[in-house]
Image 1 (cartoon, rainbow, N blue to C red):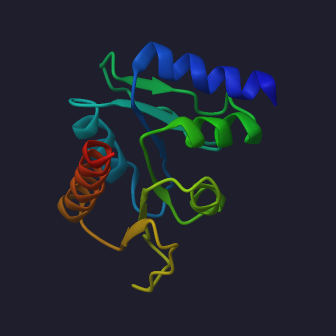
Image 2: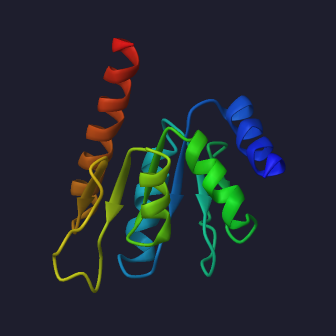
Length: 148
């Protein structure tokens, strides 16, 4: 576990505040790539998960750790992250366990139903609506940091 936390801390030291993203095929690879590319203009994006391919994004702010982290390393990365953006899977529940704000995209088979934890913004939506949800969460985090 100490090595897992060390990985997360080294990412934080190297890149500052970062966003963790875990994608799926249900919402569509093109949609996810558009979100990650857009977000990498202003934030460091760490892409995690298994069974998916990294995106071919030319940006110093895009880091693919797809298929290269353990469950505990991924949880440590989430715990140290600024925000999580992903699909309705186990990482959604990890974000709740570590009290991390997130945007959860329900795509494909969710039939428009959204079940989420209280710190999540959930959407079954277009790329523009997901971008809006990300902006809302980032603004909340920024305002909260100013208040403390």
